[in-house]
Amino acid sequence: MKIITWNVNGIRAALDKGALDWAWEQMPDVLCLQEVKAREEQLKEGQYSMLKLPYAWNAAQRAGYSGVVTFFREKPLEIKMGFDDPKFDTEGRVIQTLFPGFRLMNIYFPNGQRGKERMDYKLEFYSRLLDLCDTLHKNGEQIILTGDFNTAHMPIDLKNPKENESTSGFMPQERAWVQIFLDHGFVDIYRHRYPDKVQYTWWTYRFSARQRGIGWRIDYFLVSEALTSRVQDIVIHEDVLGSDHCPVELVLT
Image (cartoon, rainbow, N blue to C red):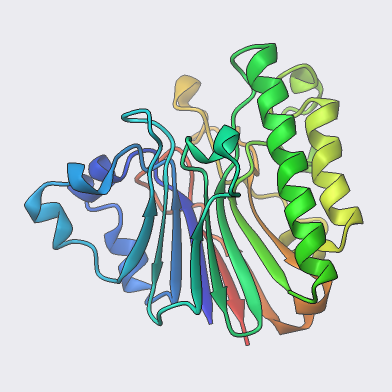
């Protein structure tokens, strides 16, 4: 089974640029997109024809903001939007899809760069998600969390860690939450398989950062410990353009 995650930074622009052609060519079983910045009905007629798989779409109430879409080759056993918590669900950040053997969560985590209020919101989001995952694990479910976490966990996960210690995305309280998930039965499967490999998944559009190799790894697959034996590989496709993020691919048996 092949699952691809990608923050496309606007699905309409991505479709117009042909950026998603690469994703369809990979023949994924599931494709998780984040920051789609559109409601489904905002697509133009020609753009609908570019969507090659059935999908679930969770848009934010605010126009042109946030939003996630999950495409699937086989219909999931269950599709659920959000957390059942209006505080977070109005921003269109989560789609849960249940497949045989695991629950997949396509997530666009909040960004904490716009002041204390949004940082607090981001940390509350992590806490609410952890509560849900703890309950699911207690009930015997296995989980895959994927998407744009908006946080780099360790110094190896960004080019300039020292310079960014007080920057949202690498602040101690954000990094601590990633570690809490790992302490609650999850595995960062990329770092598990490639403990010393340096690759990034996001580059600012400024300062020619991508061309200069100045990036961050903030797009993850966290999998329940019991699923690690099913993982054949995880690939960061850093050469794929079309967004300020690149796609990440997980292959399961």
